[in-house]
Length: 309
Ligand SMILES: [Fe+2]
Image 1 (cartoon, helix red, strand yellow):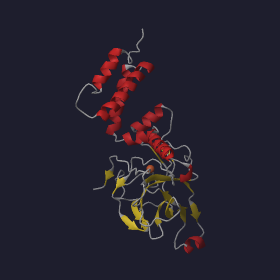
Image 2 (tube, helix red, strand yellow):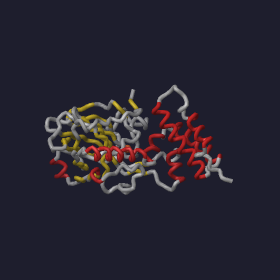
Image 3 (tube, rainbow, N blue to C red):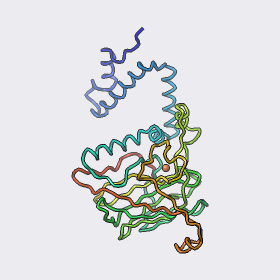
Image 4 (cartoon, protein in one colour):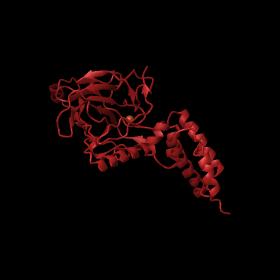
């Protein structure tokens, strides 16, 4: 018995009805997307002979995913978010846009509206006894010129791999700040060195990864949006060299130019000379952003984001 029916005349007509293509209401774009996705799904059910049990397991999975608020996490873990980056890279290459610092995924844990500081900020509230981190650098344009007044919007996890707002045990905006670069384009912040982290072990994202034999771990990293008037907003992260998962990130965010060394300063003379009273690690990283032009569009991605009350 041939059960391949998705491409039959009857199902072809049925897919048009199911996707609203025969209705004069609704959005043509929504219809085109739904029609394509439904058609591909019908064909996959045929080709893979997906059983009703498997299908309903998938429906329950989607409910679990939404209930856990992990759809954004799964988008990162399945490489879809990275794929969107690669498509934007391809669009830049096709348009001849010279890009500076590589873009990489935002992830699902940004919170808008972090406090704004000029030049320098302290990100952590002092309650996490991780290694003190000093990170600094210059925001430059493609020509190498410093960009004063740029906003470096930074967020990272604590030593347990948890983010404030989502982890209610942390203070509001802990390890989240916006820093405006000074007249020389410089930014600097003090915080603690974050740890890598994994997906919630009992959550639906990890369950899917288990089913396909993958881990759900990320290397230690720090997230950034870098923006300035007349420039395209950069969405990126730095990944800290030496981490076990540096080149095995479940979210595929590591890119070669985004690997940063964390240099240890343990000698009292060295750290005291830097005005510090204890050992610290230092990361130096310059961001290169792209000026807006006719062929360079901004790419502030619209997505639902958290905002602290
Ligand atoms: Fe992260």
